[in-house]
Length: 573
Image 1 (tube, rainbow, N blue to C red):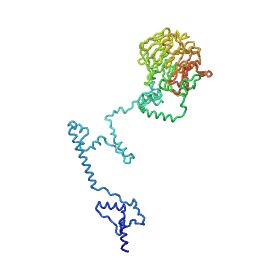
Image 2 (cartoon, helix red, strand yellow):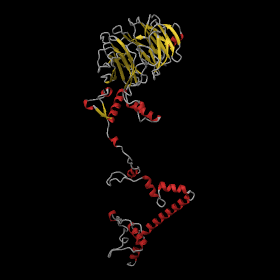
Image 3 (spheres, rainbow, N blue to C red):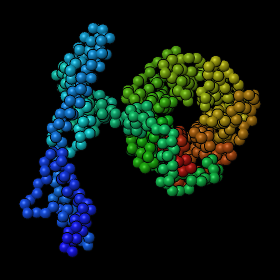
Image 4 (spheres, rainbow, N blue to C red):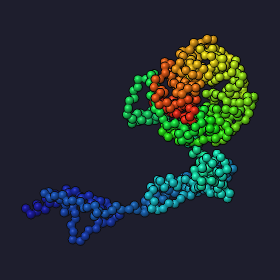
């Protein structure tokens, strides 16, 4: 019985599996050829392993495990040999490629890249340039540091002029245009850089911001991106996006009385011209006080931008050029035409228009395309000049005196109203009379205007009647009938102005107080809520104008005020 027990124990022990730690140590010992070391007096782990009925033994914690062995010296030697073999292959391939190169090409490569036959890494380092070593404690990653090192070093200038370092000072007191740009008495002299910045600020202030042609960076985006941005803007706003009609309703015109345009520069002299800038949110006010003033339009304070004083030159009319870069002004008793260049800030007097023999230059018109300047002369003459050179192109003559004139919306025709009550239509290119008709019910004309959509012609007479014609009938018929005769004024109609959308016609008479009306088109009815008779603050109106998108309406009176109104139907300036 005793002999059978050990046999069964040995048979049972032979089926045991070796623990993982033991197997790992045995493999390492076999590689190195050493026998496994064992402490004296200890039994093998497999003998103390779990048997039947015993719980499995837990492996040793990770802190007690032995680290993996490092690669041997033989592996390092193999890696060095592989690298050397790769270098020899690259050298052989490079020599094979250079056999076909001519000697001149090889010499040129040595001059440009240097002698780097045995080290291509040296060539790469030379092309990259020296890297700037940063601090060791920098928080940048390795990729960022490598990207920074790829930039070539900044080169020092070969030669420096000492005179460039000395800032030349510009005198601000002895120049009347620079004197207006001084903010305080300490700025009697400014450096060139400071003056450049000041001129830039004045220009941006005068233009209402940076013009599109002066922007250095342009927005480039695909149509998909723009549509996504539009969708985002739509989702970020709330309100009524559905409107029944965009046309102006008749009857009552919703409007608000704003601060006068020239409130920051009050005057008691008569306002002879009020006009909005065609591209910027600016209004110009000129009068018999010899000054042309520019104001920023905000509807609240209307801050003054600039005033130009013309000595002994009471202004009869002032007008912007079509592109808004110039201001033209004439006087009541002079033949001089002043041109103010807004971009350069220069005032240019034109003492004699080339080819023109008029003694006094007063009334003039500027074509909408900016090509022509039309001057109303004496004895029935109309003088057509080139806007750019101010030279005479040709003259046209009507019977009687010229009461008023205007260009058509396409600048191809000229409409002239005579003192005999007749209207003449001239072709600009050929300067031939296309048609001539009598203004119905007029003894002599005082004013004339054309709409921007090319549909209407309005003629004002001395009896206070305004006849509204269709432009096509004025060109084709010898006796056209007016669409409607507006008889709301009882004195001579001296001012006529269409708004840019051709939905409003403003009519006024300088002979009577509060003699101004706004006519709705195409119904040809007068708005009943303007002017407010109870207030009586308009007085005698001498000039009128609408802003480029009809958001504002301005008029000038003989009390020196440029009254301004906000038209709520139009959302833009």
